[in-house]
Length: 139
Image 1 (cartoon, helix red, strand yellow):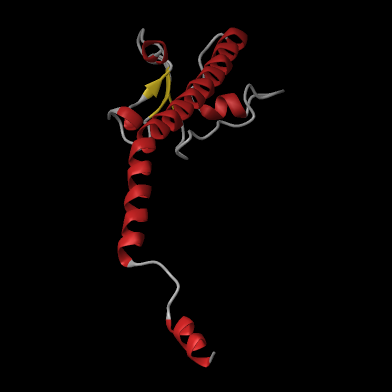
Image 2 (cartoon, helix red, strand yellow):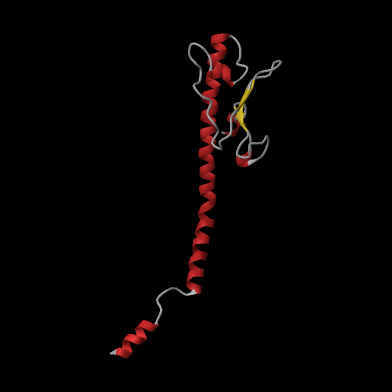
C-alpha cells in the first residue's frame, strides 16, 4: 500500500507548456477575430455622442443669437448669461478634450467641434475632426 501512495504522490498535476501555448494561441485568435468589429462599434458610439454634444451646443448658440441678436464671442457668453445661462456647462468630448468654438467672421458661419482622439487638427478615423459643419457629411 505504501508503494502505491508514493507513486501517485510523485505524479504532478498541471498543464504542459504545449497545452498552455495552445490556449494562449486560441485566445489570441479569438481576440483578433472579434477585436475589429468591437473597436468599430465603440468608435461609432463615441461618434454618436460627439454629434449629440455638438447639436446641443449648436442649439444653445442659436438660442443666444435669436435672443440677443448676435453670436456669442466665447463659451462664457453661453454659460454666464444672465438671468439664466443658455448652457450650464460645456461638456468635454469623449476623449476628455474641450470642444472648440470659432465665432463667425466676415460672412463665414460659426464652427463648433472636436479635434478627435488625438486632440490635434486634421486626422483620419478616430483622430478626425468633427464639427457642426461636417456632421451631416458623416451620416
